[in-house]
Length: 93
Image (tube, one colour):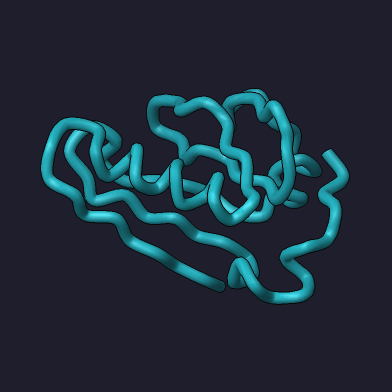
C-alpha cells in the first residue's frame, strides 16, 4: 500500500493539492460523499460516489482519498505506488 498525506494550510488547499497530484500521476477521482472516502482509479474515468459503487467496483478501485476535506490533512491511499508496473494496468470499471 502506498500512502501520501497532504497538509496544506487554507480552506480545501490540501484536497486541491491531493487532486492535482493524482491528476499529474494519471489517476481519476470520484465525487466526495459524506462519511465515505473518495474513490480513485488509474486512467481517465467518471467515478460514482463511494456509496453508489457495488462491492465489485469498490474491490476494483486503485485507491481512495479521505481526511478532513475542508481543512486537511488529506490522505491518498493507493494499492500500488504510482510508478509500479501494476499501477499502469487498465481498470475494469
